[in-house]
Amino acid sequence: MKAVRVLPGAEGGRLAVQDIPTPQPGPGEVLVRVRASGINYGEIKYMREHRTGAPMTAGVEFAGEVAGVGEDVSGWREGDRVMGHGRGCHAQYVVAAPLALMPVPPEVSWADAAAFPNVFITAHDALVSNGELKAGETVFINGASGGVGMAAVMAASALGARVIASSRSAAKLERLAGYGVDVGVNASCEAQVEAIMAATDGRGVDVIIDTIGGTVFEDHIKSLAVKGRLVNLARLGGASMARLDLNLLWHNRLKLIGATFRTRTEAERLACVQACARDLMPFFREGKLRLPIDRTFPMDAIGEAYAYIERSQHMGKIVLIAD
Image 1 (cartoon, rainbow, N blue to C red):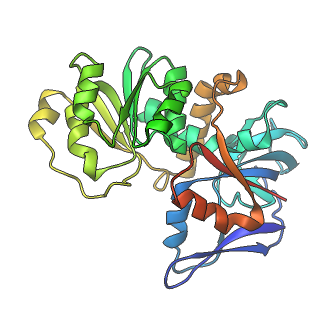
Image 2 (image 1 turned 45 degrees about the vertical axis):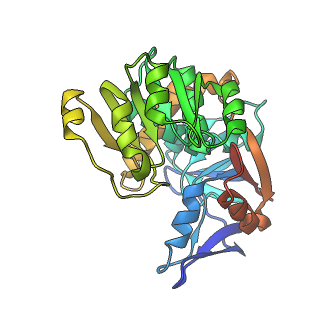
Image 3 (image 1 turned 180 degrees about the horizontal axis):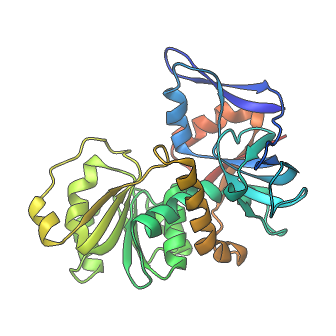
């Protein structure tokens, strides 16, 4: 089968489309014929860090048909339309745990299905499992035009929260209004704290989903309401933390939370998939959680796809179509 491989190198990993053996499902495993797989910015960073070790297949989310099941698998059978979360998904076939799979309704395209798992599992984990978001609360999401940001906007809105979101593009903010943003903040010309306080009558927000990190950390602390929760997912603006006002942390009883899948056990990862399916699949089936597909690429154009993502001009998901 064809697969996108990350080959280690002293200067960082590089991509190559190679023919490798088709995997076979073992006991408790499902083989999926991949039709499409989502591409995420974090995969580019992961590729660059791959300097030693064995080559590996890229990709963490996919959509396709069940092509085979191993022993002791129940709930799935050949021909089922599925989407899922795992490793090595930029390939024509992938082996997955049954609990890593979610059903795909017949009317949903492969590209739309492949755009769902990673970003919505991540967004749900940040908003609900870590951020403890409840209906009626207010959430602030920065970098909201990226895949995870948009998923968080849509999921929070579907779950009954009020959504404030930021972007450095006025055009992107205008588009985001159609996906559940109640108040947009133009980060290129508006002061975050003042904008959030004006939008919340001086109260602040209950939850912040942060992908920027160090450069906005102090403003985040000032933007939180009493008992507010800050969930950090990425550090695109720097990994070094700015000053932490311990008086604000103490007085407002704030929670600072880091969330990643890199240090999760397999059982924890599968629990995240199932929690997302429990809370968000009803909205997905109703057509309420569909990220816009900015562009699709064939597998042989994976290098071009990565370069397109790095330009940061897209809005929504980039999807790789398997041959």
